[in-house]
Amino acid sequence: MKVVHTVKETRDQVREWRKQGLTVGLVPTMGFLHEGHQSLIAKAVEENDKVVVSVFVNPIQFAPNEDLEAYPRDLEADTRLCEATGADLIFNPEPEEMYAPDFSTHVDMEQVSEQLCGKSRPIHFRGVCTVVSKLFNIVCPDKAYFGQKDAQQLAVIKRMVRDLNFGIEIVGCPIIREEDGLAKSSRNTYLSEEERKAALILSKTIKLGQEMVEAGERDSKKVVDAMIKNIETEPMAKIDYVQAVDAVTCQEIDTLKGEVLVAMAVYIGKTRLIDNFIATVD
Image 1: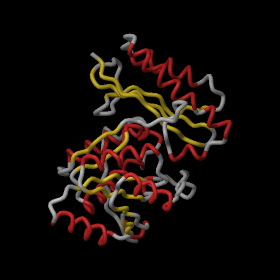
Image 2: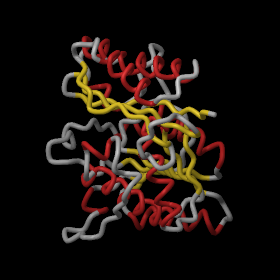
Image 3: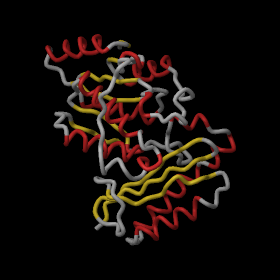
């Protein structure tokens, strides 16, 4: 497995693979890889001849008050995980390689990016769409892999690919959880021991919402209100949002019908964590 740091090296390698008639999968990440990322890489290895993993903490998706500098990084550990899982190339550029000093072109999206995380992080999806578009243009993969934990991001990328005619199949992969239920996240490392215990309120609340829907509840307000009430039992938790939306459009809905996404963002101390569930409702 190779680790490269430039666009040219990445393109040259992919070009060689294409000459051999090989298929290419891409797993975009911000590094500090865990079992959730590993599941994406494993799926990509299963479905493609060659797999590229990008490891890049994208500065333009962080607001000035967010955790860009503190975001965890460990390329050595990432390399070991990628190699063990069967990836063929890590693309690990510096910000200067991705963004020229006078960089001025962005990919914006309406509607799908406006609710959920888009409300409290208004520049976030502009940064995500821009960097993912660049990665798609650099690697030109057949398939790209994203986790359901970032369900709105998955919906945003699917819409962008459709709207901008990228010839790429987007593959969504299930949430990977710790044994006690907490969704795997690079940001879990920020949590103190006490905060880590408190963070379990997220997965417990997701389970509560799922059980209500499975029991037949179709009023989204009743489900959301019950989930909010449950989160509020944890003193260390501060709610950013809990919403029920259409899983494709990410627009808020009153009645749970069709493919539904129920998602939340909750601060445990200073750490913002997300979780969700998707249900197909008759």
